[in-house]
Image (cartoon, rainbow, N blue to C red; front, side, top):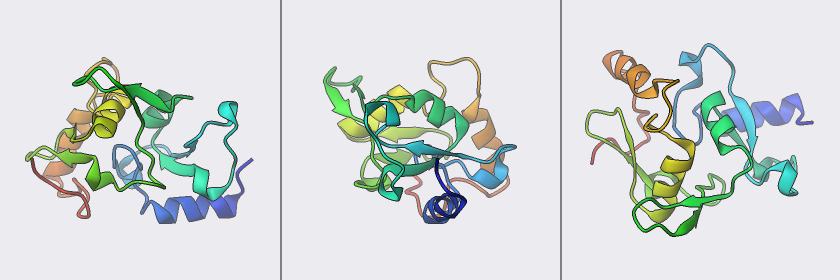
Length: 148
């Protein structure tokens, strides 16, 4: 079980953004979850170094996967690891701020596995939500690269 103090630390460290899709928690109807980077089912711990803040859709799609296929090269790649890598080294926003593009094998594999743009799932409509967030000036987060 992850303590409340650790949950607060994880949320603060992530600046209340999903560490995968960078959706802001304050625009979500639900509190974000604590995701295990190395899933507990594979031996991952509750240590803060193994924890990330994740929206429900990313946490569910991350499940217990640690790798995915890069759709460009068809090679298995590790998923993005927010404790060991920088988001901007693997992802960029399209100029309109609606889609996340993987710019490395890790980024592409993560985009594909977590379906960060709802390309493979009918439910969700995250790109539609991002459109509203862009109109309100809340998205993309200011610390993120914004254009292709």
